[in-house]
Image 1 (tube, rainbow, N blue to C red):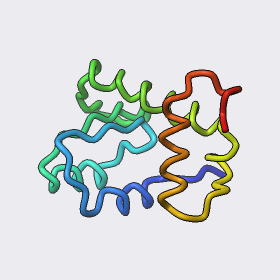
Image 2 (spheres, rainbow, N blue to C red):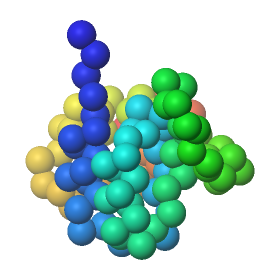
Image 3 (cartoon, rainbow, N blue to C red):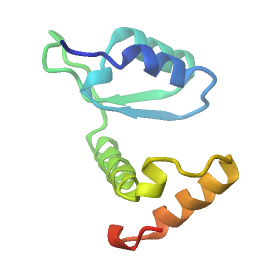
Length: 109
């Protein structure tokens, strides 16, 4: 059974202020695009292949989404960050900063 992340996307967009919203094809729905329009932002969402009328998107801006995904994949390799050993938000944020600066995952604290 396939799980849709669209309901979570609506909650994440509530109260957000942005000029552009980048998302992959899984988030290509008219409801999410309408939410982004009400934010007065531009949607940069690759159209879902099943869509009859393909929506336009900025291909150059969409390429930058990959950089963000690689960043999160890299910091999740740090076990202390992925399992959230630190209970206090300030300590956890400090380890996020450390993990973000480490280029080799074997150096994780």
